[in-house]
Length: 640
Image (cartoon, rainbow, N blue to C red; front, side):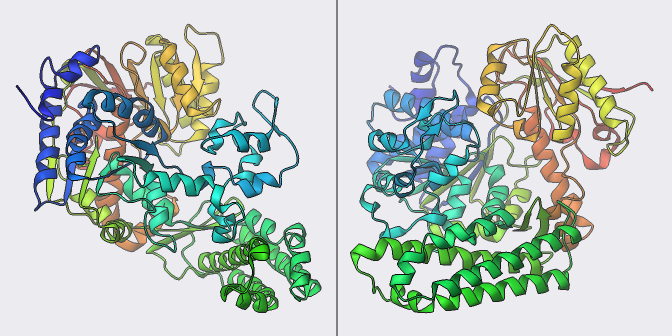
C-alpha cells in the first residue's frame, strides 16, 4: 500500500476518487516527488519549477508540504500575484485538501490593511453609507456585528470613496496610541494568523511589509511557496514605487485637516494661528510645484534629467513644511519621550501620525524631482502625481529573502524559464535556485491547438492600425461563432474593438473589460459559451475556461512594453543596446506564453491562437516561435 503523498496522485488514488474528470498526470507526480525530495533534503534551500497549464502545480506542491508540515511543526506562507488564485486557494483548494488529507490544519488569507475597517474612523462617521443597490448601510452597526472587519462584506460600489475614509490603511494608523487598539481587526487577524498552518497572501503585501520601517513580514512562517513567480520582479517594483500625488498633499494640508487638531494643540500651548498660516503656505507652494511640473513633464513619459526650476519649487515647499514642523517641535519632543497620559494619548498619536505623513510627503516630492538615481530608478509624471520606481529589482527580491530567511523556498510558474533556461528569471530576481525543474505539458498541442500568425500589413503607429485590427477581430469572432478571448495591448484598442463587435446584432454577446468587476466578467464568460471577452493585458493570466466556451484566443501583438514606458527608457539608458535582448524580449516571450496558455486548459480542449503580429514569423533572430508550444502553424497576411 502506498504511503504519504503518492496515494493522492496514483491511478485510482485519492484525487481520482474525489474529483470527477480527474486524470492521472505523470508530470504532476514528477513535480510532487521533486517537492517532497526538496523538503527533506537539508542541503537544499531554494527550488524553482516550471509547470505548464494542466499539470496541477498547486496540489503537487501543497500535498507533500501539508503531509510533512505537521510532523516537522512547520508553517507555510503561500504567495501569489492574483486575487483569483487567492480566492481559489481559500474557497476551494485548501478546504478540499483538508478534507482529503484528513488533517485539521488551519489556514487563512492575509490582505493589506486597507481591506479592513478602522474602528476609530468608523466611529467618526455620522451618515449612512450607500450600497450598490442604493440601500443605506449602517456602518457603526456593521462594525459591532462583523467578525472579520473585512470591508468586502459591505455591498459598496466599486471605487466608493467611503472605503478610503473608513479603511485601516497604515497611513492613518495611530498604533499603540489608538483608543480602539484592543478591538482592532488588523491586530486580531495578525495575532490569529500566527498559528495558521497555511497563510495565503500576495507579493505586494509581502514586499511592502519587508520594505517598511519594521522590515519584516508580520506573521511567522518556515516554508515559503511562491506561485506565479514570474510576477515577482514587477511586484517588488510596485511595492518599492515612490509616489507623491497632488491630491494627497492637498488633503494632508487642507484647513479642515489642521482644524481637527487645533483644540488639542491649543491646550498643549502650540501657536495654532502660526501653524494654520504655515499649512496655508505649504498648500500654496505645493500647488505651484504641480502646476509647473504638469507644464514641464509629459504625462507618463520618463524624466531623465533634473529640471532645476521645478526642483527649486519643490525645495520651497520643503522649506515651508520644515517651518510647519518647527511650530510643533515642542509637541514632538513630548510625544517621543512618552509625556502624554492615557487620556490624551489618542489625540497626540493622531497629530504625530499626521505630521509624519506630511514629512513623508515632503521627502517623496523631493526624491521624485531630484532625479538623483537615474537610470537605476525611473522617474515620470502620472496624472496629477510624481512617481519613481527601481528599474532592476534583483537586490530587493534577494535582499527580502535574505532578511526573512525562510527554511525552504519554492518558486513555481507556468512561465519561469525561457526555452528551459532559468537564467533570465535568476538575473531579474537575484535568486539562484539550488534545484530547478521543468516538466512537460500534459497536453498534445500538435493535436489540440493551431497557431495562426497574421500580418495585418501596417505598423502599430500607423493611423489605420486600430481599424484594421477591429476588422480582423470581427471576422475571426464571427467565423468562430464567438467563443473567443481577445487580448489587446491598450485600453484604447479594447474600446475600439468592443465598439466594432457591438456595432450590430450578432449571434454572440460581447463582454468588455471595465463594464463590471473582473470576477463578474469571467463568471459570465464561463456561463455564456458563445460569448466573446475583450480585455487588455491583465487578462493574460487567471482566465481558466476549459471546454467549448473558449476555442479561440486572439492577441493583437507581441507584448512588448510601450517604448516610452519610463522603466523601459531607464533600463535602456542603464544597459544600452543589450537591454532589448537581455530584458525586453525575454519578458515579452514569457507574457506571450501566458496569453497563449489561456486556450488549452484540458486534455479535450481544442482551438486556435491568432497572433496579429507578423514579426513573430519574420524576425527569426527573436526566436519567438521557439518559446511557444509546438503545434500546427500558419502564416497569413491581410489583403489591402
